[in-house]
Length: 100
Image (cartoon, rainbow, N blue to C red):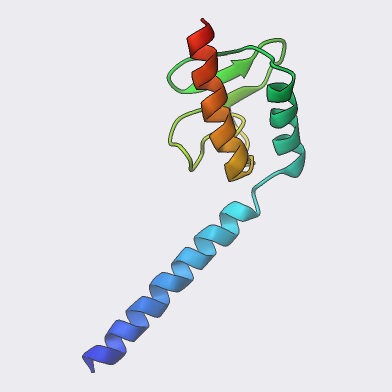
């Protein structure tokens, strides 16, 4: 009986993880991801607080807490960049700190 309960529990946990991954992948925006990479490629300056960052010359406020989960999403929107871009953004902000 305990083996069956263990198997059911494992299957339930796997389904929860799959649902979480599927929900987050569906919120990745290719257009937004491309825009963030474009701003970083152009070397646009960025200013930030503990929770948000803003590229100079834009009105784009980006959430930069809770890495990597909600990191990089524009405030008040439920879209996200790809994980690779989130990592690049974190490194970009760190590099900007060294320049300031």
